[in-house]
Structures are given as structure tokens and as C-alpha cells.
Picture 1 (cartoon, rainbow, N blue to C red):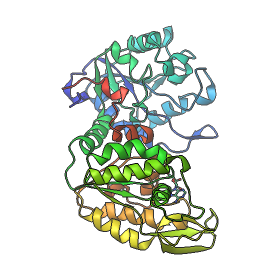
Picture 2 (picture 1 turned 30 degrees about the vertical axis):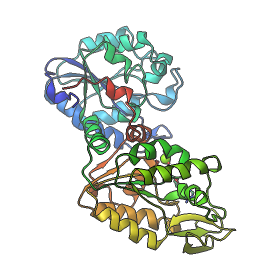
Picture 3 (picture 1 turned 135 degrees about the vertical axis):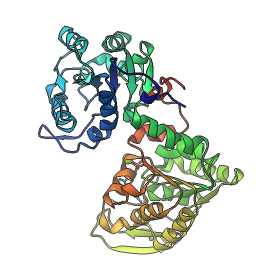
Length: 394
Ligand code: ADP
Ligand code: MG
């Protein structure tokens, strides 16, 4: 178990929090502030418990230079609104300078300041010790709250913990609790659903999960590489040519491990990669040579939904079809619905899967939707995330 802000005394202490304020921007305005809202419980807790709060984050890719189009000023303004309190913001091109040091030193308990985009400094992504020390020198405690970058060893996500005691905020606590217990100690039957575009992206996850799951469900674009390995005709469907052999190996590994691996039995095919194309639904051995598989069919949905209904833990990563097109969204929607209705623990990892669940209105029915695409994948691969590893154990 990792230490959280609840396990330490923050009263009167300067606490530096690595948040994920990497929000999408449009014409200088924040177009989606979900990530800002997600950080509020931790910030409010620290304020209410008399901490002097210093927030930091990256946004976009300024590539180590103070490019003002990536300033965190809009985030400071939005935070001020939500916290009902002025959030102090000094737009320093070096992130830390004498003015910033003075402002941090002068903070009152319950006050909040936000540093400028940490990626204005090249040393951030290089995990430069000098920058990590500069950041650390502003505070007495480091709080990790940025799951989206926890798989990166950067100055503000990992290096800083060389100089300060590190604990987790509430978001990280939740990610570690649900993703961690799914990988380490899942309630059984444990079902993993893997989809998305490419097999290659998900191989390490599939490998790691084969040793743990009871059933492995495959859908989405990656299915066709498995079909090819089985000797089926896949028409113009997405194919990961280089990894056909590997797909075959994974099937053998699953069998040897006693894991049931389920592949689609029917497929919704389109003539072109477009929503308003000619569509046919066929069994998996009848994909027309001139068409491509773009969603799982109704027989597959029924089979998968049945397995999901009986699961005690379900982890889902990767959509079942091209859900961005309404005519090929049914499979993904049905799986999201089956998970919403499942009585077990339901966990969504992966950016597009999370977006699909939101879009179809099932988000509040899931036990946990991971906020980190790449980070949640690495977690499911069984990797140690540098930003999590630095947090002290209880
Ligand atoms: P996640 O972000 O949840 O990990 P991925 O990024 O791996 O998911 O995959 C998402 C993408 O996979 C979506 O854009 C979706 O359109 C695509 N996809 C799913 N099924 C197919 C398919 N049959 N053919 C082509 N693309 C597909
Ligand atoms: Mg994705």
C-alpha cells in the first residue's frame, strides 16, 4: 500500500503537487476541463487541512522552451473559479526563479499557487537533477497526482522524490487501488476484454494478463490478425502482417495456461472505411474478399455479454469496432452496456475506450475509469511506473 495525503500531517507545510492539467485547448481557451475538476478533491483536502499548496503540471509539448501558447495561465484562472479563491500564478519562463521562490515561501496555510508549465524546461523530460532539486526546494512534501504521466520518469513526476518525502493524492490512490488489485489480486472470474486497432500495441498486456485471467475476450481491429493466424480469410480488414505468428503464439500460450480466449464469431463488414458505406454482417469465416471488418456482430455481442455478466472483475482496453462511426458503434456500445450491468468490479483503461464509455453514457456505472491511457496500459502490462514507484509505502 502506498502512502496518501491522509497518512501524513500537512498542516502548515508547503506541499508541492504534480497534477495532470494537460487539458485540450482551442483558440486559447480550455475546451475540456475534466482533468482540472478531477484534481479538486485533493487540492481541497490540502487547503482544508492547512497546507500551503503549490501545484505543477505540464501542458502540450513546448519542447523545453517557454512558448506562451502553452502557458498554464488559463488553468490558474479556471482553478480560481472552482476553488473560489485566487490561485497565485507567476508565469516564469524558467518555471522557478527568485519571484517564484519568494511567493512560495510567503504562502499562507490554505493558499494555492500554480507554477508555469514544467515542460518550459528541457530538464523536465530529461529528468534533470538540477531542475528536480529546484522544484523540491519550494516545498517540504511531494504529492503525486498525475497518473497520465506516472509512466514517465521526469523531474516533476519522479526526480523530485529524491529530495522530498512522496505520497499519493486521491486520484493516484484510486488508480493504484483498482488497476493494482486487478493485476495482482483480482476477484474471480476475471475477464479481460482487449480491442482497439493494433495487436502490437496490446501484446505485452495480453501476455501479462494470460497468466491471471480466466477469460480473454478479443475484439476490434486486432481480431483479424488472430483470424489470419487461424487461416481465415479477412478481406481488406486491418492486419498486423508482422505479428501474425505472434498472434498464433498468444493463442497457444492462452491454451497452455488454461485461459479461455474468445474471438468474434461474426463481423460487421463495410465496403469502404466510412460510415455510409455498404454493410454486411457475416460469420467470421465468410468475410467478403473486398470488404473490411469494422465491428463485432450480434452473435459475438451475445456471447461476450454472457461472459461479462458472470464476471467478478472485468478490465476493458480498446473498442470493439470503429465506434467513431455510428454504423460500427453497436458492438462497443453493447459491451459498455454489459459492463455497466455487471455486478462485479468494472475497470476501463485506455483513452478511446474511456471516451466510448463516456459517449454512450455509461461512465457513472463503471467502478473505475482510468485517466491515463499509456500509463494504464503499462500498469496492465505489469510494469513498474516510475511516478508510482517513488511514492512511499505505508
Ligand atoms: P484505447 O485508446 O482504448 O487503448 P486503441 O487506441 O488501441 O484503444 O484503439 C482505438 C481505435 O481502434 C479506435 O479509433 C477504433 O476506431 C479503432 N478500431 C477498432 N476496431 C477497428 C477495426 N475493426 N478496424 C479498424 N480500426 C478499428
Ligand atoms: Mg487510443
